[in-house]
Image 1 (cartoon, rainbow, N blue to C red):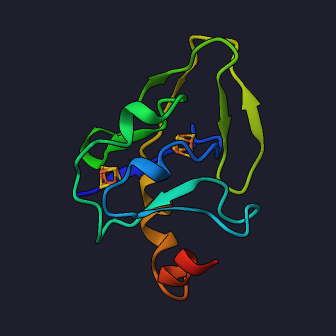
Image 2: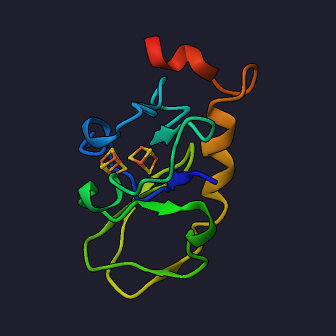
Length: 118
Ligand code: SF4
Ligand code: SF4
């Protein structure tokens, strides 16, 4: 298991410093990897990052919601797509976002562990 950062991430970095195993990295280049990403092999599922996120972007992997209700003016950054602002009440499926969190750390797909030194 791991925790997953979803497309609700707006890259403010608040989660990084609370992680006891330093496994949260900013996606780079930003146009290709627009969110922050959690290393699934290092995350110990402590949950410390969840309440730090002002945008409710982080979930335990098994609890990534298929129907998350957006709040008024809440923003969502599509993967390699546009950012859009919710009017409020829209239901969005965040389950596909898990895949990108895993692929970010796969050598040859994402930057892999080199991301920690970028
Ligand atoms: S759940 Fe804990 S170990 Fe995993 S990314 Fe969040 S703070 Fe780090
Ligand atoms: S997951 Fe939340 S706290 Fe972490 S960088 Fe993204 S918006 Fe900020």
